[in-house]
Image (cartoon, rainbow, N blue to C red; front, side, top):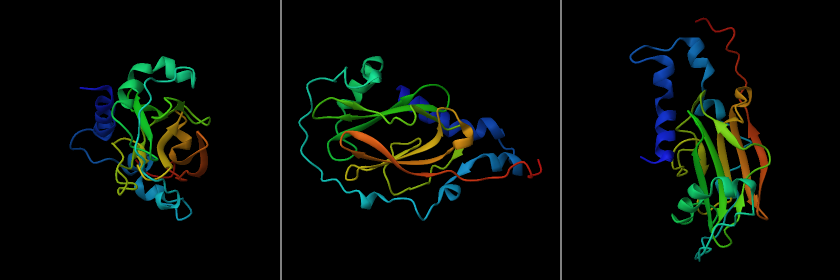
Length: 197
């Protein structure tokens, strides 16, 4: 079983571990989780607003280890992802992998040059309080907290950035000029303290 599948399985089982099998969660437990309804945002950008033409990809012969600090550290998973071909923004590959229970790191790889791109805002996301599998269900996501399309440069990352659970939400990035630019954020406001257990 690959690390990616193990990470996805951990995220899928998290509600069962938190709530227990067969036990209905209390209102307070339910309130802690961020759902697809919590992330609904009329002002959020859509994939169709950032179209990218699908292009024939001639893959780089090797990963550019000097392009990003994580390229050398995670070279094995990044090389394996490169071999899978493009899945994002025309000739790019969105790669993500587990970094612990309910945690995922990610990077975008330019399959033409082998360069690795990461956002400056955060390096990984935590999905402990995330229950939004059906958020943006029309976008093929490969599971977990990433929503992306081959014909769009929009990338939506769900979860708590760098384990800051107070900021669990949806982060909208656009790939432009070989950089991921954060263009919109949706962080739901929930008052769970007044919810009876």
